[in-house]
Image 1 (cartoon, rainbow, N blue to C red):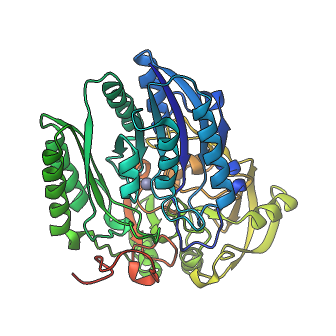
Image 2 (image 1 turned 90 degrees about the vertical axis):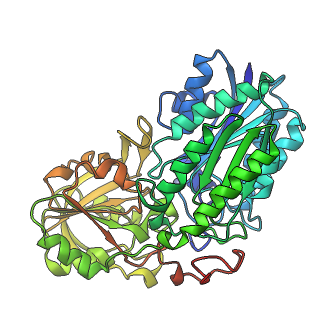
Image 3 (image 1 turned 30 degrees about the vertical axis):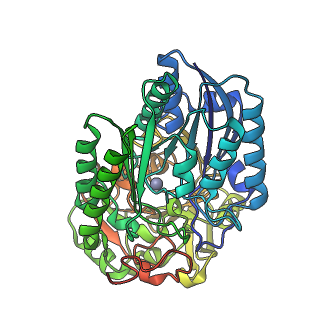
Length: 488
Ligand SMILES: [Zn+2]
């Protein structure tokens, strides 16, 4: 069989003032044709799983475009149109196909276009016609819309947060696509959107309401006639009509069954809505508690400044508190400040300098902090993820400097990337396990790799654009009423 394969991925935080233009895609990932296969083969990603499963089943892949950028503000219309045109042109030139494999995010918002993936899938459907099966993997944070359901044959959402099953979903998409292409199944789908907008901090899948939902979904998925079930937690900070939790059930030709199972899961989510609400400690209280604990490393999770949720990655409230408290044997990973990196590079390794760091994007989330430190190391910011997330994939932090401020090591980076892998600390010569305190700018993903090495984890509710305190945001477009923005 012959399958077209492409990836277009962006999680858009519509509250962010950082535009997502072509440069942001170039900094993270923008590849064409065979490069897609080279870069992703053997990695713990959806594309990695698709490539492996296609190879194992003797399918030929026709690679097109792989485009991903760090979460930030709306995607530039010009870049989106360019990517869409490229994908559609490649599809038109691909020759005879048995199916299409797409790795999308599901929470991409384009300038003047709220439903990025719905529009992209409509274009794909127009190009390939109504009969060719289109299988799509989607992030757990997808804000799934009716257009996405209508134009795709099957959707496969991640079942974990932290996302450690991306390659499994890629393999699943290939297996089901072969079933459809081979005429063994004919999927019909039901989609439900209870009025529920779970904050990021309440979405983890290890326990709590998401675990309960996913366990029930897994039971239902084993029933005869069920093809696949996804429960999407949604991405609350993409302020669009369809933001929020949704349920997707596909069965083999059985619409009544799909409807019944989707209704059951939507009702279960709604019943437990209050358990999604998340609270954490203020920076001062969190730092005091961390310093009072024996041993280390104690992980302080800066949940609200998670670049993976579209936050700037340069807020300073926790850093300010650590300096005030005189914290030592501490690493802050990582602070996005390309200007500060340039100053460190100009000064050179071993030099001591005084400069303001962080707080450049949105001073309302914490002003720059003046520090005096010694440049400990400089690097080009390239490393390889060790997993469990993105295992084998190259990470790029851009020019990177470590500034040592009285044994508080500040990792300054030039490209925004979530602290989800201790390798981001190790590759600049710091042993994370030897530290007393580690600050990670991440909401949930850090747990996959940091939980096994952390003595304790303290969640911090500092200012920032990925805050789980949704009352801090002025929502304008999401459908109302919706819980917890409205008491229901
Ligand atoms: Zn996600």
